[in-house]
Amino acid sequence: MKIYLVGGSVRDRLLGFPVHDRDWLVVGSTPEKMLKKKYQQVGRDFPVFIHPKTHEEYALARTERKHGFGYSGFLFNFSPDITLKDDLIRRDLTINAMAQDNYGNIIDFFNGKRDLKQRVLRHVSSSFQEDPLRVLRVARFAATLSHLGFYIAKKTLFLMKLMCMRKELLYLTPERVWSETKKGLCSPNPHIYFQVLHSCNALIYLFPEINFFYKKSLLCHFFINQKNFLRYSFFELSRISKITNNLDIRFAYFLQFISQIYSISRFNTKNYFFYKKPVLLVKSLCERLKVPKETQKIAIFLCGFHNFLQIIELQSSELIVNFFNIIDVWRKPDRLNKLIYLNFYYKNDLKNLNKNMTLGKLLKSMFSIIKNISIDSFINKNLFQGIEIKNELYRLRVKALNVWRNK
Image (tube, rainbow, N blue to C red; front, side):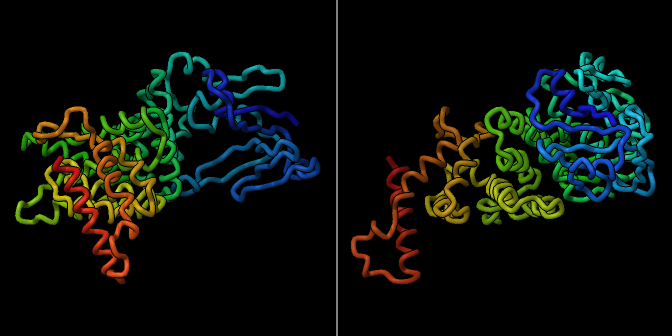
């Protein structure tokens, strides 16, 4: 029995990254032998074992053969005769197909070290195209490593397009898609994740709402000479990723511009407060991918209130207090913290705004004026009961905000 360190930990060590999780590969063993050595078996699809002391994962070397559709349609072979090379050749990228033995020697059958040096994301073998999840994984690696100059090899991108054309991505579960997307959003350059998926035609199957946004935004820009909101969305996602790692913020700041691909009738003033039409796209995306509820909420708020917030200097104090009520910042102040990085994206449309004032700073200043107004602010508490308390709080908050704004 031989044990090797494999996968991302070898890659990250060679790149000089800190290694957090280590994956181990066992060659020449069986489940029975592992259990005798007190390893604990986990996993239903194939045997993975937990080390009795370190609690790290040890997987038996295996081969796999495509049998059916999607990422789960495989038959596995865990024979002790499977070699290290047999196992490594089934991996996605050459930079993930290296191993390290007990003496620290790097075993590199597929030129992973060369591709690391040349900054290339290249598939190991033609079996790459058998697993549609690899389309998302490569997009995620591109987003994670693009700041180092990594790019996708032409043949690898061709195989990704081929997989999309065969519609294999439709067999991926929502949980798998969101898991990879979450990692992509948390990468140094999350906009690259979506750009890669767009370049290989994956968006139409995985994120039809974002694909619609792409097409609609480009058409509006080309035919109506409208602002390129697609460019805004990528710029904002890139900007915000340099400020915070918060998933809710990154996801919502990217999707907020969907509101701009629909025109608003000047006779329907409700849409200037909360625009429901684009929110339907965001809801559809979030519900299908089973996005966590709070992440959904922030994305829906920013998309629905996008137009309102961009011209907030022109809005009434009544509507501004209504906005704070709806997003429930009194009970959930962290939501306001997620808005503090917002900008005014169309400054040419604003006349009286201080050039150094961002939207996030303005919202924070407005809320600071009214956040401490409570029942204790009443001159005579006994005059109000039930709904009257809520109405009086609303009146006092609007009054205080008006006084502050008129200074």
